[in-house]
Picture 1 (cartoon, rainbow, N blue to C red):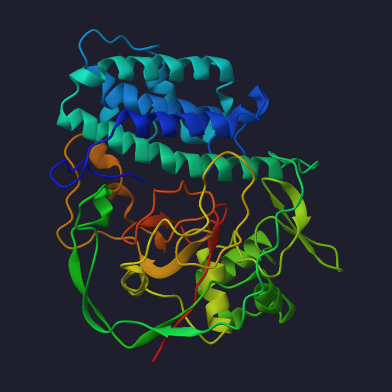
Picture 2 (cartoon, helix red, strand yellow; picture 1 turned 135 degrees about the vertical axis):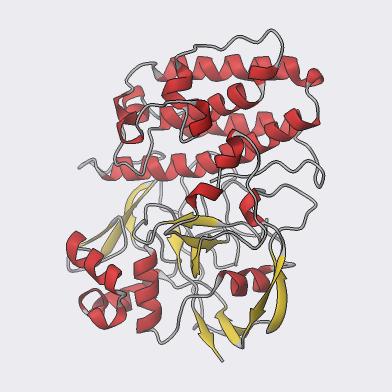
Length: 414
């Protein structure tokens, strides 16, 4: 996930943004031991230590490498902490990132301090292109902050002790929502995509017209309580509601509830960053796959919204109003607005917009080459840093993936 740098249409990064983003990453990993930060729980996840190092490698590689007199902290790190940039040469295999027991967590923190100090010293020398790359790097790191939290949660879920990253009392329950209401959407020709000013990733443009037919969107996401109704009605055992690939996935993986849910016959609990807690029936359901979201929508007599329907409805709303990540600490979804709380699956494939062109060079590998077999999610989540979201933002995952804070808002034709 990332994007092209277009310096003509937006403000450039300032040191304050850089310092704030870098500081939050360290705060998020403060409770972790070296072992916590090293282990990799699955191929889709990365160790916390790797996230801290990779985001640092990004600044070192794409900004500081071109600064006269800069020397890399350790030349071997280029191999260890490159992610998928073919133009930057060979890299350590993604599924084996958990084998990087050394450097230690403290050494990675020292690496971050080295790069941060070098960038602060070099800032007066940086031209507009380099400063725009710093801005891209900050947004890139914010994406990794969300991944870092969800990867830690997945890791702790593998531990029979079900530990908490931030132990404490259960968060206040969500307000009891009323029945789902329906909001009629715009019809006819509308424009979607980013047009500036302000930062955006390359996949959010160019802005273009789409045609919307009569439809309505639910006024809130589906709740845990409503999802329990789906479970009790045998939703996971009835192939009528499932896409063929989704039904095969349910059968193969033995899926019978959202990820991290545990049932004992008397109720449900779910593991969060604050440990194992009773499922809050009033909170938005989360950690569901596209397959599950689509099946629920079919069961409910509805469908998933398209990306264009969702973005058109959210245009003009404040993307900072909602439950987002503000500082280090436990997060569980509890809000119902279009932004924050849970990412919302759409029925739209993640494909390029008309006229899309990736950036030149290695940063052009950020988004375009992933436009195959994935679906778009909108809105951000409780683990998305505040200020990172906008209506045009396009997140994307494969249809079986659900370790992110992913939920669902229904749509229907009129």
